[in-house]
Image (cartoon, rainbow, N blue to C red; front, side, top):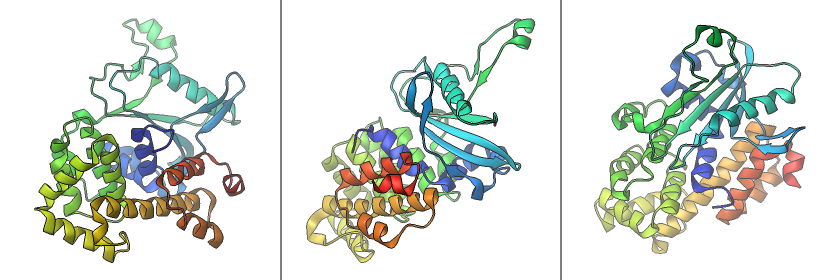
Length: 311
């Protein structure tokens, strides 16, 4: 993809859209989600400046209103196969950087989404103490952990109705480090509930992490063979997501992914900066290089204004 790891790129592409953040909260923290005004959720520039250390690139950061009070939600994405012991100090630092650049001190909700191989062993409230007096006087850090390994597949599949793309993405991240054939039941569900360009983003992520030919073989098994595969690619063609059956699955997937990423970039710009000028939308629609689209997507997250992005 680009200079981001494929896991980070996939995560940011899925959850840069506010409605999917709301869906994530609907799934794991419904009591919080029902208090958030969906229209108030706004993706913020994740590049913050600290007087002490200069620029710092944070994970996804959102501003929102919770019971009409200005708040921030930060989602930290951990995909490492080892547990990062520095995470608590990073969270404290991130909170400090955010508070440093604004006058007031609004509530900050830290959520860690983890899908690594190792068992998570960092307490969600730090420091730990058995002393009542220390507990009373100590400054505390707390964060909320979503450990996908602890969530049963069926539990998430039963919540596909909340948001197909969000649930499918979570299931894919949960199993991405396993043998590709263990993803078959996830992919089968994705095709049973096939919706919009999200399927291409998911297939691209799986193809980047795994061997693309193996991915194609697994898809043929799921769909029932070459004929059914051709039926699917014909469907993509009819939807304007493929240029021709003779190009094969990989080209069809690439064309669909290009279109999906173009649409996601335009949608992201609308979310962050309002209406997209017709000439800008046309310019984005004419970019057919996936690497360039990935770079543009990242820049759209970091830019402070449409003018800065266009430069």
